[in-house]
Length: 123
Length: 108
Image (cartoon, rainbow over all chains, first blue to last red; front, side):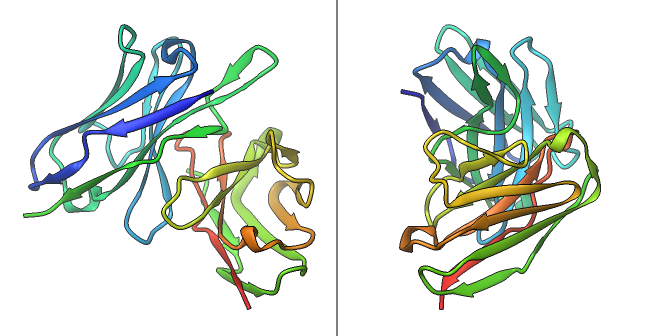
């Protein structure tokens, strides 16, 4: 069974840094496409970042240059390093896996989601 | 960037009724790379429909998707109590992989 469990959220001051983690089980992170999606309180969904199975990375303009997506193959986990945090980064952050069918996997749609971790940027 | 607009913003319906949700894109979503997700309060989104009209594994057949180009529709043929939730569309033809603002379906 595919499971994703995020951790690392919390309260952080503007300008600070935080590293989110997503522990995966039931599949191999390095062989799949993994994304981070966030949701500000009471708002809609915003795609944040994607890492391809081959290692290529993609970012939303709103986080480019400040956030870095990575994976730890030895721990089968996904990470999001968030620097220079702003109040508008306050959100629940979800990690999600892309879509696999008939032995092939794709970056989208997002077929498996974690429960999310809340990041609050405030002084 | 492809901007998605969903309508209506809120839908008030009774169990057993039919729900029709619209998602319109600012430019063509080629290859129908459009998905629909359901989200209930305090929960993560759940994939319902991908490639505009294909149901994800385990999704009841009362959910159906249609459309192409810039206009897409999610239909729930007969609302069950567990279907009252927020529904988001997402395009995945090009980065950034944008979501619509959502349609809330609540009990009338």
